[in-house]
Length: 264
View 1 (tube, rainbow, N blue to C red):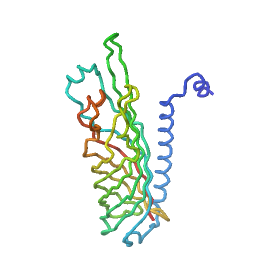
View 2 (cartoon, helix red, strand yellow):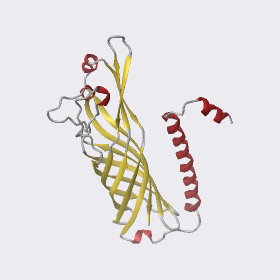
View 3 (tube, rainbow, N blue to C red):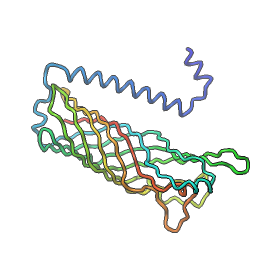
View 4 (cartoon, rainbow, N blue to C red):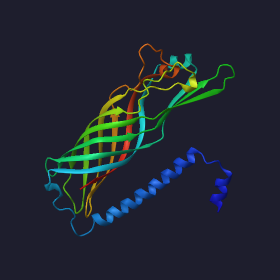
């Protein structure tokens, strides 16, 4: 009752939404973890012939936390342009993909996720000092790339203990932004100007996880970090950089992904 009264008095903002979504995700993850432990520590061995097959197919679902390795320009640029701060804020997203796994032996696998679709959202927050009244002016520029990714990963897995095994992964990724904004005309008002990102990105991925052998399929719980190798800031030829571009020296992609893989 008190919660309903509180919500009737407070405006339901995006911060409330993200907090509630975060709590619901925690509850779901806790339930899945307890469910998997119940089956994995059972006396019977599930999918005993799983590693005898040369190929396995499945799919992956995940939550991502995108961001950037931001390298700012020298401090005099900030002073000349009255820029006080520049921050990167992540809004989160989700990922889904189709998995093909090639067994080299019991411990080494090559995984192809061909392709995966990654919906990402983050913000660049600029705070300028208004010289007329010395009050801060904040500009928030949204970045919403949708990547069609082609990662190739080497997976090393320990020997099975009952119905679970631990593994690590490392590899490379190539991505195409399906919602690229490089064709946007930035010769407009400051409020409508956008930060343009290169359409193509490539980088490395590293992570680890836990394989859980259930009765009918293998469930993987995986956390990995993707780090871009390319400066994603794009300047259109013949177009002057915006004041938002002038503050950035380099902008490389970075994304944390928590995935659930299902293979049969």
